[in-house]
Amino acid sequence: MLVNQLVTGILLACYYVSCIDFAFSSVDCLSRDINYGWLIRYMHSNGASFFFLIIYMHISRALYYGTYRKPRHKVWISGILLFLLVMATAFLGYVLPWGQMSFWGATVITNFLSVIPYLGVLMTQWLWGGFVVGEVTITRFYLLHFLLPFVISVLSTLHILTIHMIEVGSSSPLLGNSKASIKFHPNFQLKDMFGVIFLTMVLSLIVYYYP
Image (cartoon, rainbow, N blue to C red; front, side, top):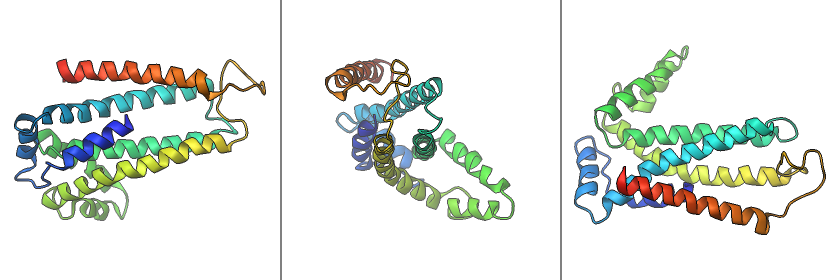
């Protein structure tokens, strides 16, 4: 799903205009006038929802199996930080179409920073690039929304490496405290391929029929 977001996001960036006067019309033009533009947009927007669905499943698994405890607590911490970064990236992308929901979403959410003592108002104005949500705000959000997925890609790789750097490796409720191990190929590789194919089919069904 991360690869899907990166590829479709780069394609969308070719047509998007980060300007309050043309942002909405550029998205509308992409959906109506560009060949398969609607497909790219719906794959990106629905792909974000699927991304979060998988993250929630992944976190639920970690909670159920207790992998947040030592010695895997570092993996848990890195995963939660990664989750927060994904949430921030999704919020920035939500603002970019610049409809009424986007504008007021940006206004309300960024105002949460203003409750921080002493620095809150200053931080909010810095994020806005002025005293109100406007032209500079959408440009900054667009820039951050474009760059953060690449940061997420690097951190995701580090998240996986953190698992392999721990002596005990990945956890399994079937093995318990046993020292036995299961090879990734072909056991988990086939399961992952089945998961990818199933997820792609469901996403395609939603994108084509219920976008």
